[in-house]
Image (cartoon, rainbow, N blue to C red; front, top):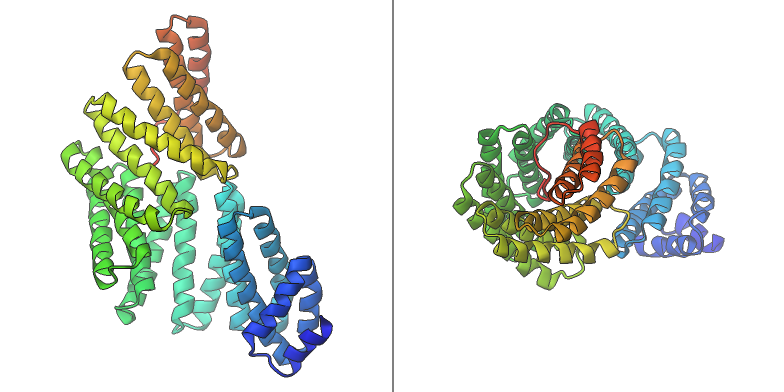
Length: 431
């Protein structure tokens, strides 16, 4: 192994395929061997630095592969090993490349903790990422890759504050991201990645204003998002990532029209969303994000029919929603987001049976909802949105026990509800 590595250091530091094959052999045996490997590279001067950067790229590629496989523990261990390595060496080399690698690595670790619902730890890594990119952009103001990284870091921070229910702070970071993406779009009018980045920021701005009850402002941003999505897909009609973006933009427009009581318009956009997700799932049956949104599209349709008191039709869609979410949850039991959406699916079914006075059936689903919400809340007791979601679960159970004439049990759950309740909109899988 040492001879192989020495060959690439001495004679072929640019050979990505050869160098990464050696690194793959190292990592496959034990991730801890990375420390040994990097120690050799640190001592190897300029060529060692080149291969170290190849190592970073390789590990990022490996991380993405593990992400698809769903081996979260291995992914986290690998990235933390690399994080310690770069942190130890960054002052030794003090150049843009290593600082950039370290910033991106903080983002990837933040994403893992965000996935796990550990938002405080995710925030810590995203703050480190933003600090690094701010320093890099300040020193290299014309470097567009660094500006793009800074725009993404602002967006990531916005996501965390939004998840924590701190909408004003989220709005601040989303607007900072919007500024960066708009500047990048001026010099990259045809660059899909940049245009798509701005489109996503419009979506997130819309979702914040919707959460704050400013539906007109939310609609403005959702229309901008939808316009961008349609432009992008017209230039690349077979690009499934862009088709997914268009589907999501239809979902958010549907949610605004639903909030405004325009159920006919909402149903049109939700049907477009559902139709696109049906197309995407055919070619991407294992894609977790597509599977999740395919499920949510049925929740959206069910909510419209429920609003119109068409409970039989709503029940059909909510049943599909719940069935799909249970399938997704099997391989994603560590995901707080998936667990939360599954809880929403149980609550939706329970609400239908409650409306039909089938209290025993409603009880079963509300119990499942409550069980999941308690698990999520236990991991995030300071999260006000989760606290309110759990309160709603307790309230629903109180209502059912009251309807069944079991007043002692009803009182017990109403007391739990009163200890948690906050004034927020009803939970939804759509955000």
